[in-house]
Length: 242
Image (tube, rainbow, N blue to C red; front, side):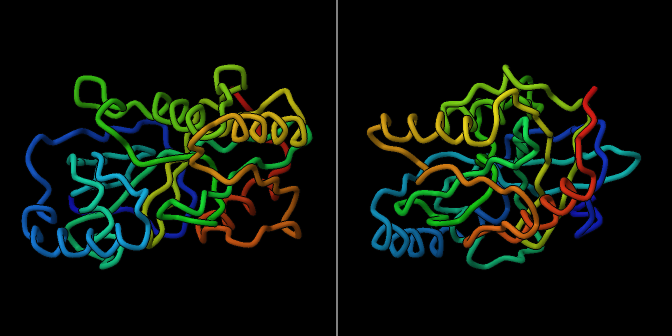
């Protein structure tokens, strides 16, 4: 199966069957010394980095509106070396994106904090899959999205309307699995909630909220995969929810 997914297209996804393989990822197994050396450099540049556990794919395929994949638990230090060396034929990254849409049809994203690996970058609140995001070996996308949004912004996705279907966008840097959530609040109200949360957090992961109101309002630092997602949203106007 390897990595058999159309690139640079927004794909409808009705089933996500991404499973956790307990075996070590070949990339981590085969690059032990390089991982240690690179991590020393990364820590010297950003001492706040933490070598926790995240997931890296060894397979991902798309067909019949279904994503099927296999991932392995790796150390964050492994991920950082993979990120520096990509593209790597044996490994790719996937993450879930809650596309938060305000009542006035703006997109509400975040800017990452200066101490993080993605310092200053703008994207929807998200993070790599972690061990707690799996149920009986199968990734729980909605749990991951709710957890990441809550941890980074303090917002509760349970109060927003949820689109039934997911979509996927696979680019060189990884595959974003996107679900749209429409909030009852305006963009300014959501941004104010996030700002208060960040101010009260003793160790915030993000710098603050970023509102995107249209294609002529794209912020500095926008991650490359975010532009096609914004174009997709604003070209469709309102997002129809189930």
